Amino acid sequence: MAKKIEKASAPKAKTAGTSKAKTSGAAKAKKPAASAAKAKKPAASAAKTNKPAAKKPAAKSPKVMNLFDAYTSDQLPRDQGYIISSFINGNTGYSIYEVISYSGVKAIYPEGSGLTFQSSGRKLHALIEPPSYPHKGIEPYLREKNDQIPLRFKEVDKHFCKNQSTIYWAQKPIESLSSFSVARPTGLNVAFVFYDHSDLYDTLAKFFERSFTSDAGLPMIDARKGGAEITAIVKKFMNFKGQFD
Image (spheres, one colour):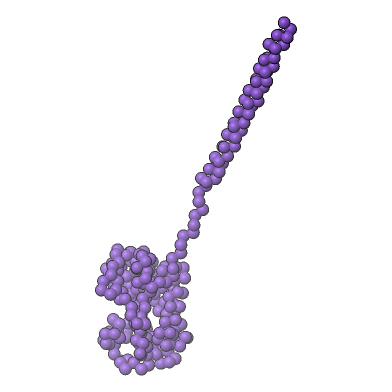
């Protein structure tokens, strides 16, 4: 009977082993809870992604641009701007310049070979008369079509250059109350739009200086003088401060 009791009690030892296995298995089953805690870490990284993205600095507008390129790329300033057109006779150096200031554009559209602006504006004329010009005594508004500007001698100021050329410019701009047009330039002619920058008037003066020397053949000292005088008129009478209200 003693042997039978021993055999009968043997299974109890296995039962104890089985409980340990279950206990250790249960302990191992709790480990995913720790990994679950680790799974919460992405929440911290998610919080990082909620930070507002750094703002990129706004793109700066150019100081000057070809007028028709600016129109094609939809970069024409509509609040206010300046347009300078030049009409250069490459054979004689006789040159005409038009400066237009505009504000509050309602519409811009192609018309013929140029652009029409439905906008208030002001136009200032200037011309460079070479020493060989044969009609110096004729009023500027009575000259041949390609040589005339809508002004009398009494309405312009002038500067005599060292090479005997003469620079004329209007004492005041002409009003354009509803619309104006700018022809597409050909040959040596140009049409540029100037944007409203802090150094706008320096940019205008430098444009005249370069064009007067390279296109009209004026000495640098006279080109600088003429450019400064014209820019002063532009700044005084065409500076957007209440001009188009």
